[in-house]
Image (cartoon, rainbow, N blue to C red; front, side):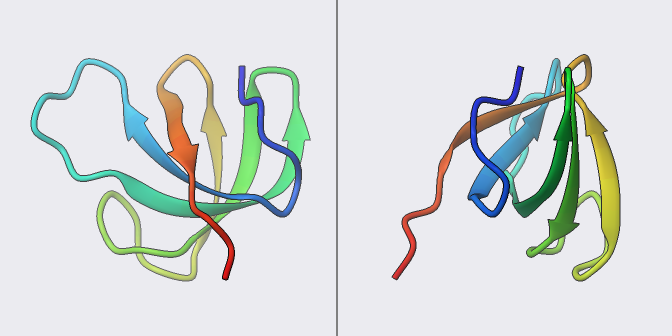
Length: 67
């Protein structure tokens, strides 16, 4: 489900929620339909926390270009 590699910084959104701000995350580990991430922006979770996101609830909208 999540097509980006470990170490990528991406924006994610929750399914079926309108007018939400994307959450910036860094992918730490992957499993089928699940990613372990570090939260890089405030929003659904506290910045700096580590979370497991399921592809059934979350989807990636794009990569953040690395500087």
